[in-house]
Length: 136
Image (cartoon, rainbow, N blue to C red; front, top):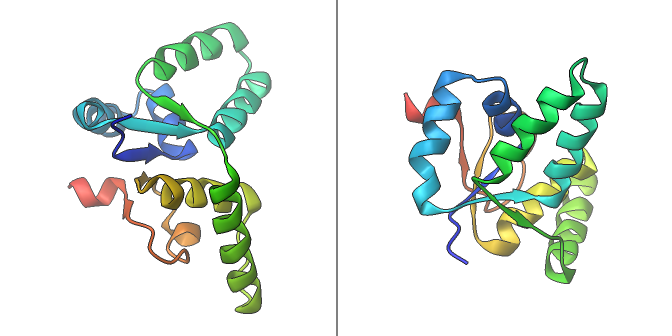
């Protein structure tokens, strides 16, 4: 499996909405290999069911999924999650569990994270983050 980056949920949503810069970045990075956490997939399906046009949104998601490899959560990722969760809690810097599982997935697979949500993810030790601003 040749994957270099994990697409976080916000970038997937931007792609689905046709945000030109994100569509271009994903297209340019796809040859390096793109992953999507199973957690982000769950969040994207939740978005489908909140959408006013479920069929079109589901079709867009199916097109997006052809560009990425879905990455599961395994025991190593759970351990990374547990360690980071304890560290962040002890520092009073709690972040949402889903975001932390996504970050742990990046660390477990040795991937960079494509996200604009630096506010949460900057707190994770050793996580390489690329946001939209990094490509300007």
